[in-house]
Length: 152
Image 1 (cartoon, rainbow, N blue to C red):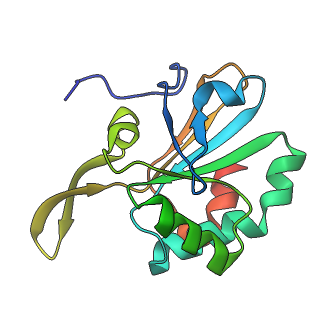
Image 2 (cartoon, rainbow, N blue to C red; image 1 turned 45 degrees about the vertical axis):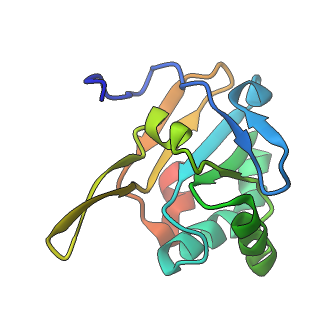
């Protein structure tokens, strides 16, 4: 574990990973555009579905403001394909089974559930500007109103 937490104003860590169709998505693909990079625990679970659908329903607003939207979880590409098909999600979802991207973005850590502590995915969203700099980090995600948090 590194001690320095990512903060606003930091360069976004490099990432690359396959989307639902196996296309490799890299941070550099978004040079010159703004990016909403969101990390979530699991496809098709209630909170993750609410969050994805809120972003879906507001997707045109993001596009109009020059943002790309990309989700990341450790689910498989096949799981992502089902999730996207079921809810008509218009943005790519990166599969990160090795949790390399999750760790780079501090979205992997201790979670308490019914008093038990285990390691898992932390729901977290990064807003990255056209120069690859983090402009916002949302760690207390309101799944049903996430767009409002991002575009506040």
